Image (cartoon, helix red, strand yellow):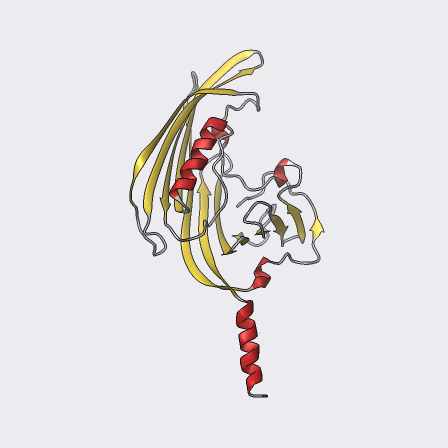
Length: 256
């Protein structure tokens, strides 16, 4: 019986492990809120753990995020100061990570109208190999006009955007961050296109906004998976650390 104990213990430990997927990726942007953040994510079913790989002592709103419902609600933890908040709490800083740009709107506040929508989806073609996986390249282009009033003076402009995604089948999506323009007609088309094309291993976004009578302003955003590993995961990865203080974040901290 004593000889069987180590084997029984090993079998018990193995039964606790769950098959999952590990990713390491980088997000960068040259926009007004410039980003260059490397992160890693563990995924098992509806459970996700995301760690932001930040320098020690650097400012942050959080550096760890855990979801146990497929990404609908996140618990975001700042391990540097021992605080946490939830993504469904009120306050702009707590609303969760965004994948958007200030260039999708005019710089005059929320009261804006949009029209003249143009959306073009290009046929998919074979893509580059990324992190050892073959991919398919998808491209979506769209544009629209914006109108608003600033101090009683009409203001208008045009937004143009190109999204290129390299996707691969049979893997969970490494991130659940939809691109949002706050223009409902466009956001619906983007969401449907993303759903049809599958999870991305790379995404490049180029946004150009031109206010009538002014220069064109451009921003480029990039998401790239650097490493993929299908492995067994410890259930403890998806547990919320204990002893944390609840605190809403400061607006403008790094996001996912």
